[in-house]
Image (cartoon, rainbow, N blue to C red; front, side):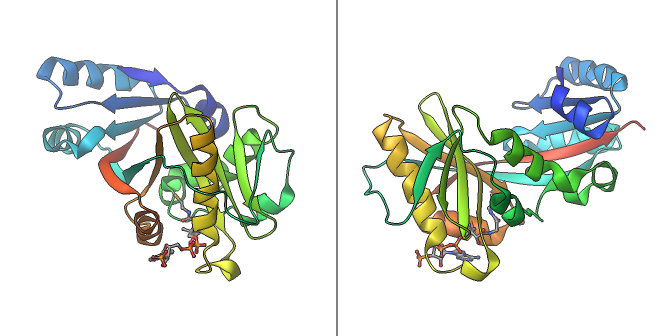
Amino acid sequence: MIKFLDWDTDFFGVKCGKAILEGALSDAEWEEFLLEQKDYDFVSIVNKGCDPSNAVRISADTTAFLADTNVQLSKPVEDVESPDGVVVQEALPYNEDFLKLTVFEHSKFFHDKKLFARGGAKVYEQWLKNSFGKEGKFFAYVANLGYCLFSADGKNCVIELIRVSDKARGKGIGKKLLKAAEHFAHSKGLTTLSVGTQLTNTGALNFYISCGQRIVRADSTYHLWNI
Ligand SMILES: CC(C)(COP(=O)(O)OP(=O)(O)OC[C@H]1O[C@@H](n2cnc3c(N)ncnc32)[C@H](O)[C@@H]1OP(=O)(O)O)[C@@H](O)C(=O)NCCC(=O)NCCS
């Protein structure tokens, strides 16, 4: 039930696991979870669809705390025009400018003090670094002003990260970046464009909705520490 997380274990230096709870768990499944979690230092528990009975079990039987509520949005891919001034590139070489733009203050890695102490603030930076030069990872960007990292998962185009520099916000750049990703997705025969963001990131949520995205699900993530 709990999956060992290689990357996180390596990055945070503690044994990390992840449990994805799909629908209300039975008593037997919950007992299995309670037994397995003892083998980990840290478990990220994703309660898909914020199932209330799972939420009650987590609060009643563990010391886990709610670290994040992630909102998933999606839209059908349409045949949109390629926006002016945006470059789309696969396997983009390392780019220091993108790193300078990368601060995601709504992240659960910021707010969990134990993760923060283990480098949580650098997770998105690392995510970006790992995406440079990689086949299957695409960047839509406007030099020095903003970028959008995306990839394909089956027929779904997933927006992984998007950031516009503070000084350039509200000028339509974010919308252009999403449009460039959608144009690309259409040219590759992908059918949906999806993205996830934190419930606390109301600015991003309103931005995505303005760009035609609709909310499809919310998942709550709890952090369980055994050390
Ligand atoms: C979210 C972000 C990418 C938006 O980029 P942007 O260039 O400022 O957005 P745009 O100017 O293209 O705005 C497009 C639309 O979204 C709306 N919008 C953008 N930011 C908004 C906000 N904070 N609140 C409400 N609406 C917003 C605009 O009003 C506009 O609507 P319209 O087309 O109906 O006029 C940018 O604010 C950002 O980089 N934020 C920090 C990083 C972040 O949170 N990324 C998302 C993590 S999942």
